[in-house]
Length: 434
Image 1 (spheres, helix red, strand yellow):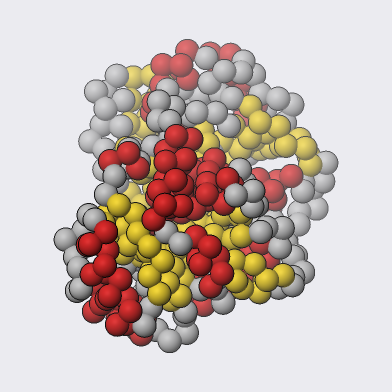
Image 2 (image 1 turned 180 degrees about the horizontal axis):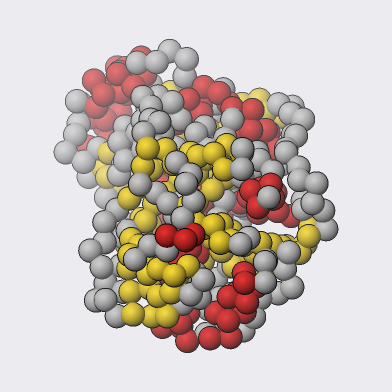
């Protein structure tokens, strides 16, 4: 057991500044020479990439729909015991889960017995914050809201009204972030951008500097010291050992859960390859094509004929391949951009993916396949046309409320593909291909 600062950053609503504050704190800890372990509540795979860059350490998803309570506790122990500080970024508002509070940041905080730092969007608000804070402090007694940080504060005099609101509710105000155009993260259609022209290091440094100037970081670390218990980390293991496992990883394909990759490393040797730049697959017993932004690199992907042919041949000769979302699109006959310009792809799935009439589809997904219960998450704007009926499986897929959704799973030889991003750290992944 160790006792270190560990806390969950949550908010009253999305858009309050959780991610900005988290990234700044991660960078501030790094600048102080502390090893800070980041975590992210929920299924997000973009915020975690920013966490990685800000802290220098891999961010770990903690999700009570995708995995069991024991798994979440094991992950927190596994990574937290190696850290000087643990910072967990919440999801949406504090009590927002997939079913009332189920899967919410509040439930994660209760499970791990860690304090909560509440971020309040103070724009157009002063003493009325007291009523809001009172509600969040007292609504659910099994959590510990330890302190408050205000965001979008207009001036120090504005902050004094907010600080008085905290005092009257019995919560400690730890400071604020001022309105500042230089600490806004540009966004794109799938959430936070990963565009290369965004100078992320400058952004993180700027937020860290503002945090050190306007937030009592020492006090934050003092009041959030928490015990982290050592837990025997047991994971489901496959009988397959010493496999050659190849993972697509480049600007087009990079939406992954870190713990999924750690699972694969226990099965053999993991090699990363680039569908954008490499000419052929590595020698592989299993290939993983994760999601990403293939729609931003259609010409380059389509022009890399040797790689398209290498993957096509691999699947046709019985190679095991799992493709998710953008990876599944890449396996289609063509991808059409928003102007309906057509780009030929691998052509294993005889159907098209299109970016025209982009419409968001998202949510948790669960289904049973080969007698294995699988959980995942869907988040995309593209759609499929001219479905390949010969590869459609009869699998029924459900959302978090147990309602059937029109999400398809495709199977061709030893290829499994679909829009759902799977979380497999508690299942025997290779049995899916039996």
